[in-house]
Image (cartoon, rainbow, N blue to C red; front, side, top):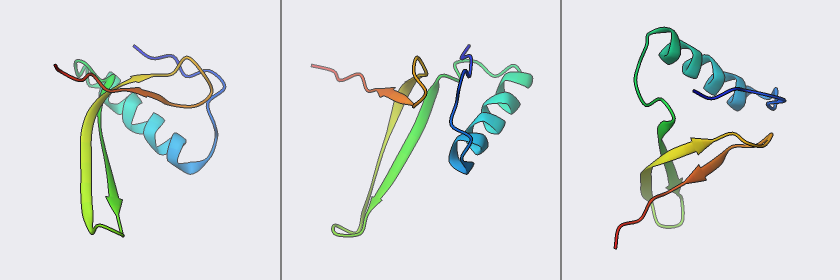
Length: 68
């Protein structure tokens, strides 16, 4: 499980923390694996990936495991 220490108080972080707490309270498994999506206006394209979340700092750190 992730411990939130000195997490940023801005809205994106508080929304994430609320959803994380909800998943934890509902005993969901592997909630450190999260789905991230971003949209490129230049390419008109959505890119998405599943990443492992590490909160060892005040900011979110994402780790993507590549095969090969």
